Length: 591
Image (cartoon, rainbow, N blue to C red; front, side, top):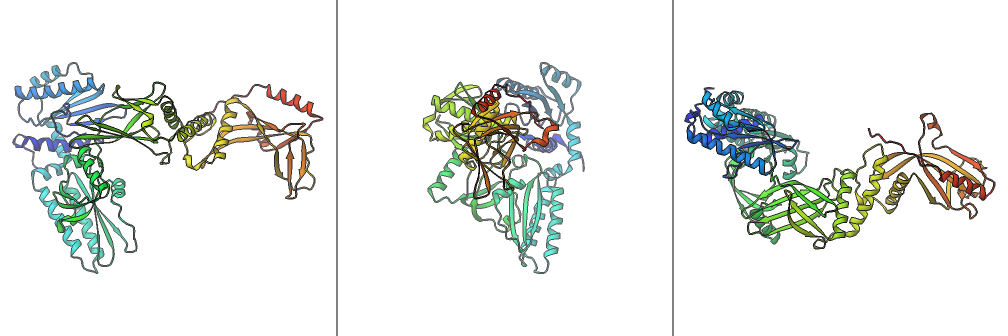
């Protein structure tokens, strides 16, 4: 392919080409919509450590003029001001344009960025041409006839789909795959994927689920004469494809019910997602075959971001005694405001903030305690500590970017205090279980736990915390095959078992526990079970105590040992001596 004459191209075209190069080349690159408030950022990469890399694209392809230098300086100054105000860490700044620096340009650039605490790079003509050689289809698509060739192949695909012969199913499939391969070579932004389903496969097409799972931005299904189903997906080749090269179409929204009309109203006001609103598509600038043949499709409209916009807001709720950070999950804008969705680190506490240009705003809450995957108990405990504090003090401060924004009264929201109390007690008990467990404890679905389950969790937590525990019993039963039970009352039974805590479907191992049980009476029941009974003389409490079992003694685990006692005084003496021992402490090392 011939070299690109950059100096002859319109500025918008230069910036479009370079934008595509960068977004395809760098994973995680985010193209920023052009605006006067873009902070000197055309493309950014947000790194996991919180730092950012910024690309500033300029169309300049000939020796820099004084005016052009002023534009570059204005972009650099806007970026440094943004970094300072938002307390961001700038990892690298790339000035990108199809122009290599002269010695004078290099000296000027070095002076401009002399105080920079990041890496600064002038990506000039050599770098841009290197990207162009690596991705020749980009220039072919935008500067030559690549786009027209792609549209002709789409028309051919439509013709094949809608005029098939009954006996040509295999041939149709092969032809469609060949066209998809050709489109993949031509289109720098999207690829086409063909999926063939047997006529016996009756799976319904769930568009939202499909798009979120496959990353498709459009999808179409067609049936061949023999019942074979073919699905064509339009897939972005990089995360910002729909921003750099958006798919534009006209829609007539056919909302009828009050709910549908409210959805549409809030969609335009703050960008709130649409959920199954009746609509008609009028036409597209880039299409899969269906739209070429049937330009006025009626159906239902969903909206959800393929590449979510980020607000960079840091939002906290605090009572002074406790607080939670809210992580952004979705940010949208509309004509008169914006909508921010977020959740705490456990994913249980979800919030929506809607703010309008007239100053009005709303704050709503939704709890999702049953969602998968399960959060760690530690994350859930932080939430319930905050909720308990909020319920007690009846107000919390909403903080945005470290600044107090509003007071949120607890009583404004219909939050079940029983739910908070149960969660608070449960997470505290599970945190103790976690300290002794060999595995990290996950917070369970609360609805899956019975009162007995919760009671056992709390008992085990109490034992782990105190080391020793006294519990009430009236009767213990076990199967014994022989006619005569070898246990003679009164006696003390001693048994060592693994301490296991069942939480929903998970079982957490927490070391070993020794049980010491005073048996006042032994009775053989009609069922064949032997009952070990408490009596008034020896009391109805038994002792549980944490112990460390040496590897050589593991064969004694789950073995019952009986010690004969002469009278209640001997038992009390044994019990007092046992209880006075210092509880063991064992370090737990999680794998």
